[in-house]
Image 1: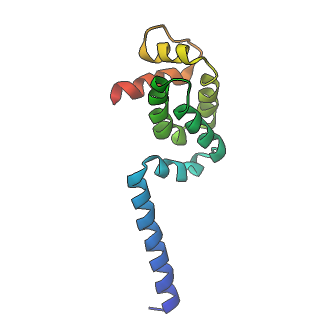
Image 2 (image 1 turned 30 degrees about the horizontal axis):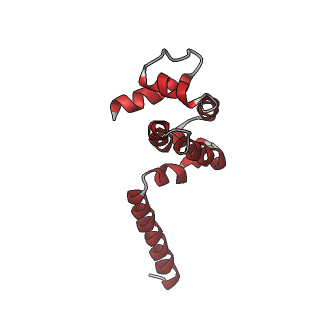
Image 3 (image 1 turned 90 degrees about the vertical axis):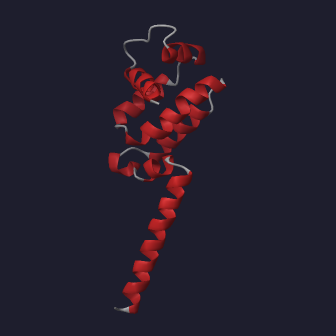
Length: 121
């Protein structure tokens, strides 16, 4: 085997091992690094994940953060825009809708996905 080909294979293998190691530390890394498949701008996804984990209340952080980590990188652009619009609501309203204390608005398509996500966990 050619020495150059062998070095390239070793680099590729090292990258795969490193990538797998990172994905065990932070599962959302795998989704974030593969998000280009869905033609979504990474900066917007990162921004929404950050906003989901840094809401005004810890309760909403724990409801929205894991959902954003797991689901946003696999969403279409329309779903991402709907989630971005959803984050504009007040924390009290979001908490009441997600927990079922108040009926959720009909025009919020991502709200049902958030509820389903937490019912399955």
